[in-house]
Image (cartoon, rainbow, N blue to C red; front, side, top):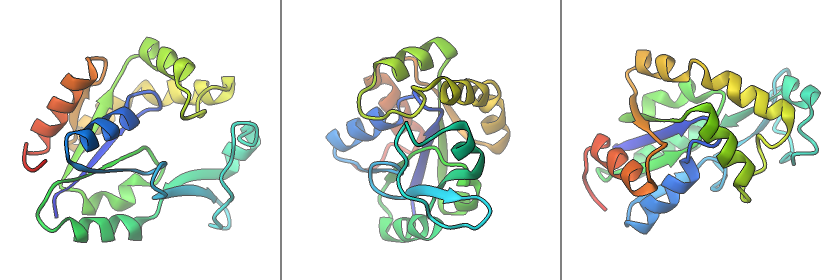
Length: 177
């Protein structure tokens, strides 16, 4: 089950990498775009409706997590059947699904890159509010060392997209496509 998890902070390029992998003929999915993740109320565990930027207040984020559906990840891993399949996203409960990934790749970026990409993107509004951007920048401070300690591969996602995807494919074993 060669399922590859591509993760990173908001603005690291996960969606762009997913699109480019698809353009190159790889099966690739996004936790956000393909419905693998949803907002969950932290106390009750109830799935919450999709929240727009205006709905994601400081209070909302204090009581909700963006979580992947672990059962969906398990099924995707089973369906891979020996071919590489990429799942791209960032979720608060990813460690619950790690057993289903053969490879974990972190797309690493600096603060300036995060700010530029979030400001200019039009397909995702997470991080555009001041309180969300502050969260993203805070998460980014130690993310690389944390993922290195987990044994993840680290890709410098400040590079040109083609180079980032080449690194991802190489780290994933370079097969298929």
